[in-house]
Length: 211
Image (spheres, rainbow, N blue to C red):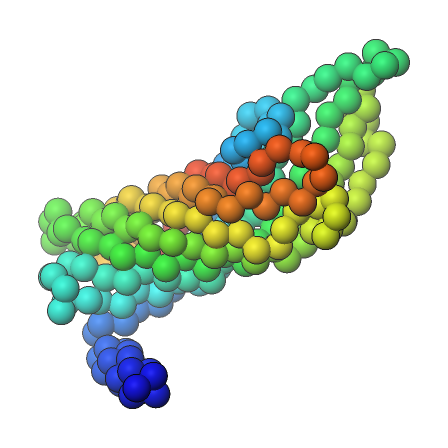
């Protein structure tokens, strides 16, 4: 029964993707503004790059204008800590940079607003796989230490992340998209012993070109 169900699913996907008009792909680039939720002591948002590829698959069997939006993205997240005084009255802070392979899978809907302009929105889950990162410490504005051991089993962050994302945007001439997005991490990725929760959260502004 499981083999028959898997075969049926594969045939459905092949049927959908063989229609050239139902599948489109493109590239995306933009900027993240991230500030994790939890007990991180984050001070303001940290900027990072968003680069990758995306695809769109029309789902007319659900409703006209409905589509599946998915992608593979290198997504830079992290935060800057608040500045505090140590025992020697030094101004101390640190930064954490985290780079993920982000895999969003969203269901979306497009509305034509004119001959060349469409409004769209999509939402759904995402999964993030931690690739590399860096932690930097600062004392009175000068960098004092740096470590690439961001993902550590004892005192670092968990590599696997997942959550919910949503995007709204405009599409021009069926090729150029301006996208505003927001991701909410649902998993506590903190491995620090005795530390509070750390859940990724970020806004993004990006431009995509669909071929």
